[in-house]
Amino acid sequence: MLQKANKPASNDLGAFPVQSWPLPMRMADFAHRGFRCTRPESRALLERHARSFLTGFNLAARNRGDLHGPLAAVTAEERGFAYEGAAMFASMLDVVPARRQALSRLLAGPGDGYTHLIHVGAGWTFAPMRLPLPRLPVAPLLRWLALDGAGFAETFFGGPAALTRRCARHSGERWEAVVAGCGRALWFLESADVDGIAAAIERQPFAARAPLWSGVGLACGYAGGVSEEEMDRLPVHAGVHAAHLRQGVTFAAGARVRAGIVPAHTTLACQRLVGVSAETAAGWTDTDAEDLLTSTELPAYMEWRARLRRRCDARF
Image 1: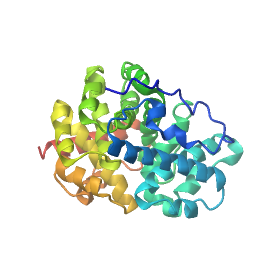
Image 2 (image 1 turned 135 degrees about the horizontal axis):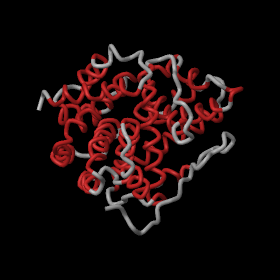
Image 3 (image 1 turned 45 degrees about the vertical axis):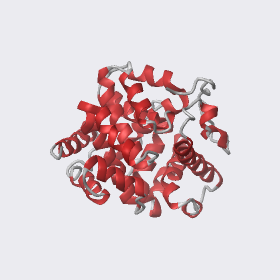
Image 4 (image 1 turned 60 degrees about the vertical axis):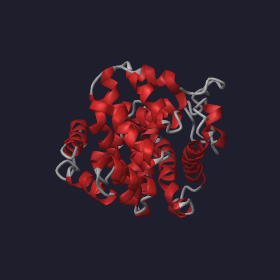
């Protein structure tokens, strides 16, 4: 269970105006948020990821011209999180008609390696405001990752209560994509405690459990924070939803390999949970999306996920 000593912080972001920067680093403090603080090593790693997101947002706010240079100064393994934060700021600029194309500029050049994270970061702004998701020129299929970003933000800032509210609103494919983001945030809320994560998912309606496990798999593969033994317990906890967990890991591999930076925990997650190298798992994400890449429709995104689940199922 999460710590009860600290009341979860309110949604610090709220409706942040573009001028409200720099974002304070205390927003990443798990004690401030009321998250689990009983796993110091995992907490430190995941807080570092959250601070990298905030750093990316603040860099984007300070550097409206050449943003890729400042982002390149962020540690390689953390750079994806920084691009995600920068994408949130860029998407806020794009809401203002006179300032459009900020996200497209972010995707150009070195940003191409962080296409997944940029789409996720855009969701922090577009989806909660119920604005049309961006149709960016690179891999239109990935636009639906913005819903994952929206679900992550909702749960990260709203805590367990927000997770429960979202999971109770079973309403189709869009809801499923958002709930996957909630599952990714649950990894942070619980400081990667696999037993705590499993217990939290079991408290949700059955329909929400599959997408939650997908988000957990993505967080495990991309963010890390667990030992090999803990990683091996994840599919046991996931049970009938293990293929969703594994699909999430393949998404993490796709994002890490595209950036050219594959941390040890991503390699381990692919080996232990999917049974292949990170490069092979990333290749699956490309192969299974080949005839879907130009689609901007949500069913195509959901079919992509389903294909990866079937591929993972065939191995176990």
